[in-house]
Length: 407
Ligand code: CTP
Image (cartoon, rainbow, N blue to C red; front, side, top):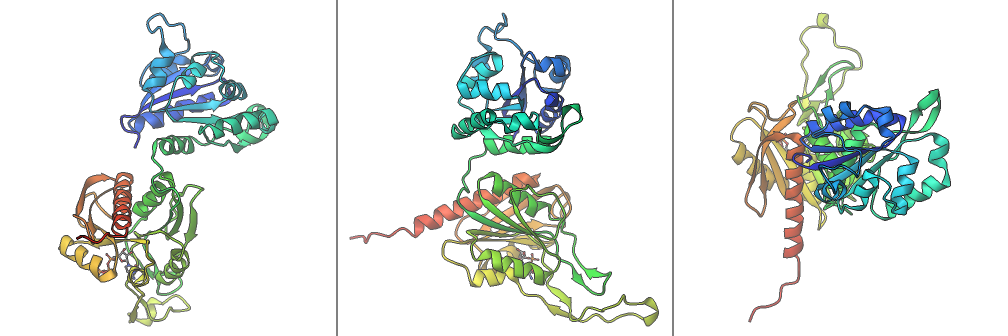
C-alpha cells in the first residue's frame, strides 16, 4: 500500500515531536519515500540529524534554500500524501486560515494530495473552542484528522491530547491513500479456527491463526466499509471495527446469522470445524479411566446456509483450505456452497496459509476467469480478494440492468 509512495512528513514544535521519528521509521519500513519538513520550533525538540537519518532524504526547514528556490511547490506537487505529526494548535490555526507562514504551511497550501493532521497538545488547548473550530474547518475541507488519545502529557499532567499511537497514524496515512470503493457497504468477515470442547481443558481445533481474515477486515475498513468481524482470534483489531469474539462453530454460526441479514458482503475466511463431540465432559477426562471414545457429530456448514438463503445483491465469499487437488476441490466448493467467489489456498505449500504472514491464493468466481495471486503479504491478498468482490458486484449490477429487446 505504501510502497513507492511519496510521503511528506511535517513535524511541528511540540513535545510529541520525538514520536515523528518512529512514524518516519514505520513509513520507510513500509516502502514509502519520506521527505521530512520541520518547523523552526520542532528543531528545538528533535535534532534534524536524527530525523534525516531515519527518513529518505535530509530534513528541510526553510523556504529560503538557495539550492532549491521553490521547495514548497516541489514538495507539495510531488507528494502522494502529507502527514503533520505532531500538529500544534498554531499549525492548525495557520492551516485553517490559509496562512503561508513557513515551509510546512506553504507546502500544505501548495498540494492537491490528501493531508493527515495528528494534533497533540495539552487538554486545555485541545478543548479550546478556537482549536476545535479550526479542526472542524479542516475536516470540512477533507483533511483527515487523527484524534489524540488520553494519557501522560508533558510536565507530568494526565489528560486528553496525547499524540495518537504511531500505528494509528500510519494506518491513517494508508487510509488517506486508499480509494473508498467499499463506502456505504456493510462487510461481515469471519476469521480464525473454531475450537470444539471435549472437556473443560481440551478441544478439537485447527491451525488457523485468523491473520488472513483480520487483514481482510482491516482492508475493508480502509476501503470505506462498515465492518463486522466474527473471530476466534485475539489479534489486534482497529477500533472502528465491530468485533464479536466466538470460540465454537455453533457460536460462530449464531453471530454470523444475526450479522449476515444486513451485510452486503460476507467473507467466510474462518476455518470452521466440520465435526464436534456429541457431548462435552463436565470434568476433565482422567488418564486412569482409560482411552476415551469421543463420538462426533457434524456442525452446520455456515457458508452453505448463507449460500442457500442469500439475499439479492449480497456477495458471498468462501475460502477453501486444501492440501491436494486445489483447483478441482475449490471449484466444487464454489458450486456446492452457492458462493459468488471462492478463495483457494494450498495450506500445505511453503509460506502459505495457516499461521504465516504471507499467502498465495487463486480466486475462483461463478462467472469470471480465476484470478491468481502469487505469494504476497496477507494484506496484499486481502486487497486482491476485495478487488474481486468489487468486480463481482459491478458485474452483477451490470447484468441486472433491464435488457432492451433486440429486433
Ligand atoms: N465453512 C463453514 N462452515 C463449516 C465448514 C466450513 O462455513 N462448518 C466454510 C469455511 O469458512 C470456508 C468454506 O466453508 O469458507 C470451506 O471450508 P473448508 O474447510 O475448506 O471446506 P469444508 O467445506 O469444510 O470441506 P473439507 O473440510 O472436506 O475440505
